[in-house]
Length: 418
Ligand code: ASP
Ligand code: MG
Image (cartoon, rainbow, N blue to C red; front, side):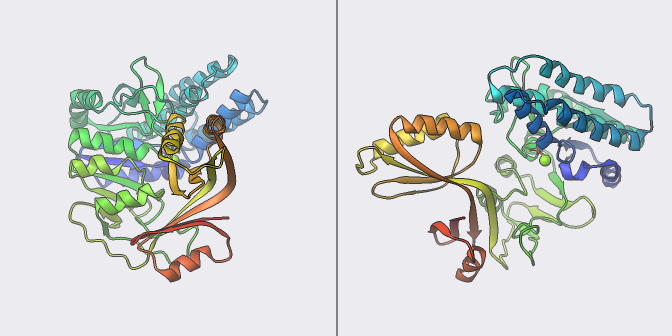
């Protein structure tokens, strides 16, 4: 049994959906579970809608109209003017209409998940309908009844025991009869509210299903030939890895390589399930395989760029040394506001950390820290990580930029630049 994951770029238009049908037609004799993300940039658009609704500014309806238009255009290209899937999609969109008629609930993360999740509900309806239209037998399932999480909205923590029980109970029987199509990125709480697993979380969804079902492999279908040493949109002359160890892949995602969601690999490693990264436009190409016993060959350093970083510097109000008890208070504040530290450094009088700029969380973190500490920060920065770096490569990536912090170990170099 195989698990496939198709990201937003693979279903950004009608041609994309048609191409998915072609990809799966190469696997007619396999049992397939297909995880799909929201179409194109829909998640970003729904984030914008949620923001506008929460802040009470007039954009909400325009943004929503654009999202609907975009999906209906794809539907018309695929199915003409009439097909039962039109009603299914309309039923999903109407949930947003109902929500935005009311005053927003005061928990932004909660509203976010209830609204943003519609992207995946709609995309999977469309893909499932297309598969059936192409005479594959395909069944749509609502992932929120299978992936059970706590109520940490926007970062749902998966209850693995409960999740695996639900998945094992129903899915094998369904797979023996048809393809199963489901939503990436979403989960459900015990009170039947929707959660999301963190941006780009659909890979993680695929990994959860594969691990609970003991799949032969997971394939994530991408718009790149496989895993490259750097983002080809930012760097010329990238090289592709034929294979990578789980360990190296975990390191890469930890530092922010966006090709795979960081939580994806560990469950696969534990169950010894290979992860393939393949180009959806060339389905028979080898791509990259992450597996047990892979030999890592680094012809060039791996370069990972994280944009939109803040460097925050924290010191004691009385200018005393940064002590262990200060650090423990500082870390408690980071944990409380779910702010992940991408890089950190301590000196005699201050502690600095490089973090993603997520405005709501950052504001809350600042107000907690300011009760006890002096806080300074610098935003709009970039964190560049080089694995298996050389001094030349490090000079190259920082050329013409000012370096605020630099940290090197034997294998890894990190620089915060402006
Ligand atoms: N649609 C979600 C996102 O864009 C999840 C995913 O693509 O994996 O973050
Ligand atoms: Mg996506």
